[in-house]
Length: 424
Image (tube, rainbow, N blue to C red; front, side):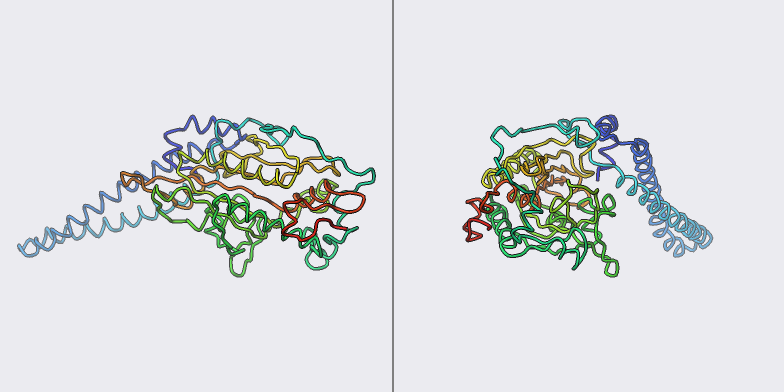
């Protein structure tokens, strides 16, 4: 969430950068400025009235002692009227504050200056292209959903039987390969200095609001209505909220956290070959990396996160490219996002496997997450997160790209975890 003061002081800049997102509610910017000023005016009036109440209340006792009963009663009447007026102002203040918060929640983050203009994912910019060779498949090759059926790697029909579409059942060597990927990603994160957490898979409304899933993505989240809890769409939500309402010191930076969780998303998506198999799921596994950074270091941290994800894909031997998302494809909370896509040889297309984002102060403002500088002044931190990595499309690409006439080869880096080198 943007700060009202920031919007007021940078109105033209905010409006200019939001046009990159194709933001259609520019009137909200002026509404926020008006509401914030009204809130301040009401607060000033309330403070003046409260000061008058305090002053007169002290005088009333002295006047009675001095026998000035009439004057004392007059001041007592004034105090009673001021209290009524103060109550009315408080009610008005609550209403203005609520309207201001609703308006602020409706405004997305201001894109970083490097974010290109554009409307859809077709306008995303290739930040780093793949310059190597693409896998050469056997003459008779298959997409991953056919490989899964052939080798018993995962079963979508069983998932439908147990739950519904988009909930696969991994089995045999497929389950072991899934577990191996999770362990490999977590071990690599630990080597890079990330502390591992195992967070809850359900969060309360305050947590979902803190990282920006609510109200923006409410329709995409599974809601346990009896207890008013939400199944997490990503580990970013509980892990970032570990520091909600915290005040850090400069020596605490950087804070680097990681965690593996199942993730749950209601989004149904479209139909067709491009969403078959593991290409789009309602439940999937993901290892997330999260960073809390000093504002001056956050973009260096973003570069470091990009290198980390790229290193994982290099070790897995997967062709990949990096995209800088355009304004129209940028997430609501993000200032700058890079997507990683791996090449699926059997499907002959790129599959998104990771998003790495800097939210700057957008999340920390909601989270009330700040740090003290050397002069004991408080500032908002910057938060970042990235998939490192999301498993379904990684698994899909590994199965397709490594298929041979005799089976599916397991990348060498995973063999210590799987304890087998081929799925046959």
